[in-house]
Length: 510
Image (cartoon, rainbow, N blue to C red; front, side, top):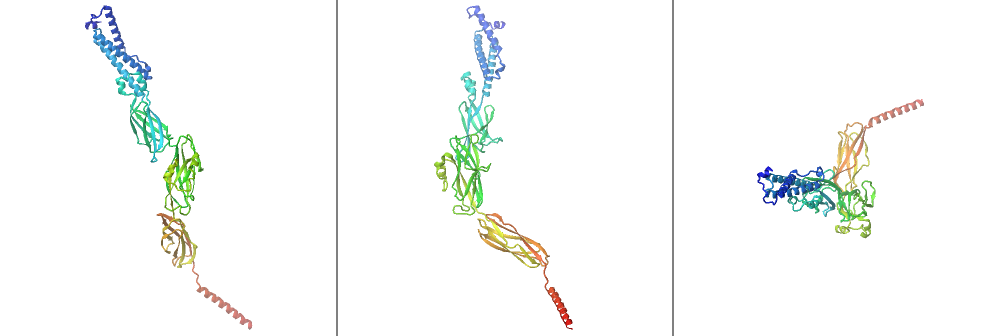
């Protein structure tokens, strides 16, 4: 009361002293209410939206009280200190209200993944069309709680999330999207945003990494939906072009991925190959042959293998070094009759595309390869020291390609002399036969015994080394038989025998 007196409080404008006293009591009560502050509920931190409502009511009350205090101050009913306390109470209530508002806004920011559709572009690359949406509850609920004219509310834009960064990762955590990270400048409430990624790795499930707003982060693993509008099976093969030798086989791996809303029975067909080339499809895991297959709801990607067997010889339809393009078709079971006869004729890329079924272009390049065979009628030779041995070798090209630089080498024993005629055959055509002679001469002082000489034959076919089976020639050096001493001994024996016979005959006559 002393402060009021010091301010020279006057009730001259009031009709009666009782009214003046009543006004004084109301002002004191208002000041006391402003000083008491906002009632705090310990659950405001848990239920932030209710805490915001409580803070807003306290802010409105403090603002109204300040207006009344100002009216009393202007009427010289309230002191300056009481007015300052009311202003401080309003500032505290405003700060509490703004803090509660920020807590609700930043807590309720949420970016949801509404869709992730995987599709194949015209260039054959796989893409993912990602759809994101701002589902933060703060926008709609706060609009009813707070006047949209609120300056802080309008400046914060609770219905907008800024700087949304998105990327796709595989199970190992590596980013598999191109670009590696995409950015949405802003994402408004219930206004979806779309991002198109090119997949660096073909997967059926991926992890979506989100960073947005005030350091908000999320990582959610999702199963990629297939673009059902394509309504076909997409076929891919990593080994789309292979070189295969005549008489050999080739295997093409196939990845089949369903882009359709229905689970139908499909059949695999090959078009564009000559009928003399045998082929069939099989399951890589079990090895069983495949004629028809079916996708399930849980499995929309399958693997298959195409086995192709080339004939032993080339022909008009199968030419060496001539690429043979062909197509693998994945035809719905119910659409086979509509396509008609697929085999027995050539197909262009446009004709295959007009079929409207899943297909992939493959290529086969028949290659010939030379096969060198060495025939030796005799591989054992008896001889004596210093006597030459001649070994005949017949070289035959039994392959499907010319042999070049056919060379025969031999490893004779030490000090033996070898001569090969001819030393090099520059060219050996398919089916051609040439004879090579190997002359072996043991030294004059060679000891009696058995000696072996290894013969190797090498050549090239299409710059690839070709080797024939090695041959081993056995040469037995025998001791030399001396004829003259034997004849002398025989003559001596005959002479002795004749002398004994003559002597006996004469003795008998006497």
